[in-house]
View 1 (tube, rainbow, N blue to C red):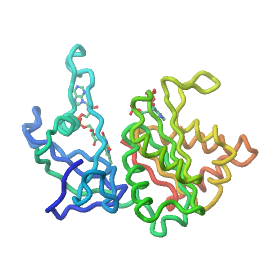
View 2 (view 1 turned 90 degrees about the vertical axis):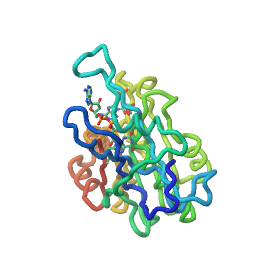
View 3 (view 1 turned 120 degrees about the vertical axis):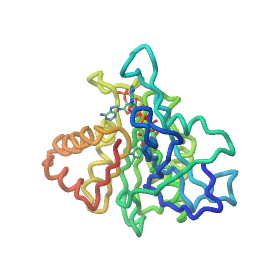
View 4 (view 1 turned 45 degrees about the horizontal axis):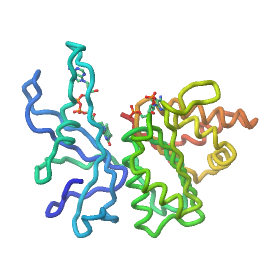
Length: 259
Ligand code: FAD
Ligand code: A2P
């Protein structure tokens, strides 16, 4: 949680904040590039414990990978480690926010939503749901499905918050796939796109409605599996897969933020 009080920094859910890591890139000796992080909060819904302050919440995965030059060493991602190592009181330079397209529409509740998140891709959806709560909560006419993919159960970020929302709203559906502990009938890892098929009786009719919007955030590549599942959902029900996919991914109802 970064304190924005006294700054003119504002943002809306779906946007990403740019973080400028201090220091210079070892190779180029130039200042580090900015890295983007989806905001996980809404300015309309102050975080518990920060009721009177303007803040932004980020949800950052610490990047540690085998080093390209020497696989016995670890490479630490510059900006993710900078953020994860911050102490209370440290300063952070922000840019932006960036992004206009990946956003909730005006008249938010005139739509249904199917949200797909993997890993930190959950951040914008936490922000969307905070914003929806601040706007009075999800009315009966809007259906919201949140499919969240993680490897293990200790990675289910904001689980308690989403479960509380699911308990409050019968039209908010929250489902988690744990890829390393759950399998499809063919033995493959369970991913978000497979849950679309698991709940076919609910998701197909929803996708067929023109006011249902799809949002995808997280690992680059997940969008391909989701497109395949949308087609399969249709063909399994005897509906033309290409037609449903074309309808469901029209630019005014389909939004993707993968990285
Ligand atoms: P970098 O130092 O930039 O490294 C990047 C990659 O290159 C790593 O995978 C690293 O392992 C590899 N690499 C570089 N040099 C070497 C080397 N010598 N040896 C081995 N590997 C190397 N991330 C989040 O955690 N949360 C978010 O909400 C989020 N939102 C995003 C939103 C958008 C729109 C975009 C575009 C990205 C988002 N990201 C998010 C990703 C984020 O911007 C960064 O890319 C990520 O944190 C990695 O940055 P870094 O500086 O830690 O890693
Ligand atoms: P897995 O790594 O078990 O194959 P991460 O932890 O890297 O952020 O990933 C979040 C989740 O997304 C993990 O469960 C990961 O599964 C899963 N995942 C990996 N590739 C894909 C994909 N192509 N489509 C959907 N989910 C994926």
